[in-house]
Amino acid sequence: MQGLDYPNLTNLVTLELRGNCLETTDGIYLPNLRHLYLAQNNIKKLEGLEKLERLITLHLRHNQLETLDGLSASMKCLEYLNVRGNLISSMRALQTLASVGQTLKALVLLDNPIAKTDDYRLYVISQLPHLERVDKDPVTPEEKFEAQKKEFEDDNAEDQEDD
Image 1 (cartoon, rainbow, N blue to C red):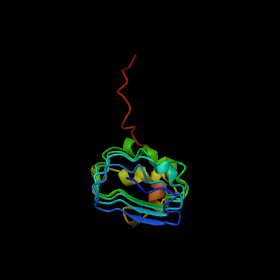
Image 2 (cartoon, one colour):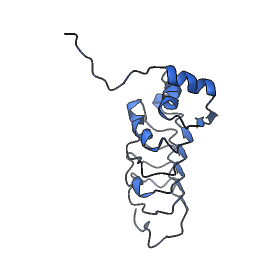
Image 3 (cartoon, rainbow, N blue to C red):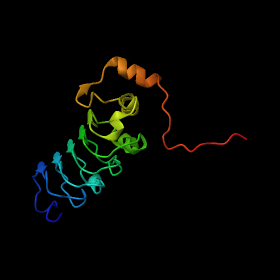
Image 4 (spheres, one colour):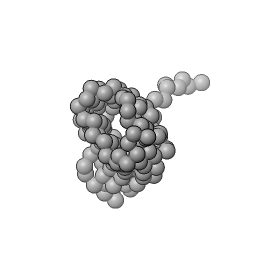
């Protein structure tokens, strides 16, 4: 993407780039941007998002993401993340969510392979205690309590041999 930098668009707060065959998020340097809609592209990798420190809404529905690597702790205002209909299939792919865990209030993971796994919702709630909604449904106090108690297997742990 070219031309999406601060000197040209200093006051831009909402950017809609839905359905443009984009393959990356790199090239968007708009520090005042609050809402970014990138649904229905071919994005496989999240890049350059650390520059979007004031972003509140990130909409990445129906792309080709397998992981959320690229989310950054510098995204101090991110409250809503929609990654519905991507290729996220493991708990490990969600680890980067912790970097935005203090501000994230709503997360949509529907129609990803991970959404078919047991306890993925509880896992997400256990990792992001400030979430208010997962997949459009409110997080209940009962779910928060159950998520705190539950122990989750580390899906990237290697088999260990007994000595």
